Image (cartoon, rainbow over all chains, first blue to last red; front, side):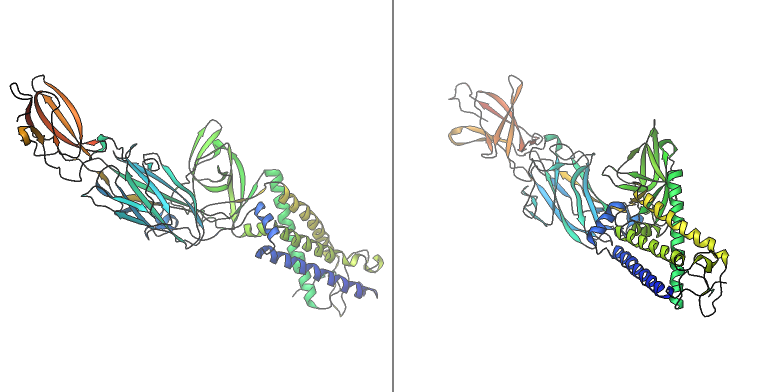
Length: 217
Length: 345
């Protein structure tokens, strides 16, 4: 059977209790700080170890189409029937623009690539250009063979347009869209002014892939 | 509540309960740290902290997974493996196909929550195969490995030290029968007895070991990896058809006798956009040879430059495009004998 403490024990014990409480306060404060990430330097170091966390859903929509994250609508294809033109003569062009939205709850970045198929999808055939943040306008008539499509006033030339083939061409990489943010993407299709004679009456379709990936902080 | 000895003079229940909580948390942390340390050292396991959620619903953001490296040829379809992408990110996804060539495997991976495989095909000699995962533990580990988290851990350990060793120096051995830290609290609290000494000393050992092993695990360079299971979403816009015009052949090719009885060939403007020019197909009916001659869009006529009997067809030009020749032809006799070399229809 143990006896009571010595006379000095209560004082030293209180000292220890205060020390323990002090340490507890430090521990709780430290945990709180690491959770809230208020100490920038510390959380930077944390990023080096395991990085930050990203939760939420990822969903990129084109002109309000293809709504649904993950497997719900991934991959999905939207046929933009308005992006088409018949009776093209060399040097004619056509433009469309539409909103691309991050419809999810996490930031994303996307790459935009394009492929083409059909007899017009050859060198000096149909060429494409993509512009961001500007809208499309079109002028000219089919009867006059002088249709010109432009994005914010820009129209690709023979030298600046991109020929789309079966191999994908990259138009943009790492376009960042924060959650809920929309940006306007504008496409111009142009028949090269030096299109060879064999391309009369030929056709092609273009396909543009918006490949969105969750943004890593 | 069961009364226990908390090795400090309990002025009230609160510090005593808090002390017990601290002790137990320290003991659990210590055990976890020991297990982790042994696993890292003996079994070469890695800890994967999931920073994103494309492996949902099986593995959510913030989960902790235990993974072991496996050689390329052992990777099988359906495995969840962690690899490093070309841009240096640690990616953990499920194997769709694994193509083994020699000691390398080309892996096509897909997140369970993603509709399509990753764009990148990972070529690896080995990959970390996920064995088990637990939700939320990744958050805990990530927090613990921050400097703030480490400060918190060290504070816990110091509290443990104080709690478990307090009475060692306070009570003479004689008054505690040589048992450190065991005493009877005042006001008739029950003495817990010597059998509680073992766990108490065990706790001290565990806490020391846990400090060492936690630092070991944290600092052993890559035993704990943050990994991405990145969500993706692919949206494709397909255009309608872009169709080139087929230039119409001119019609109405005729020989016209103009002013001064000089004949020439003219034709109607073709349907569609106006051409950039015309191509004249001139057949010398006596020699049987055909030549072509490009003329501008205006004037819409052709006059011979040499003598001969010609049959003429016309095509329109637009940039490099040339239409078919006109269905009809017109004939013209240039430099007829006996005349003044004027052309006649």
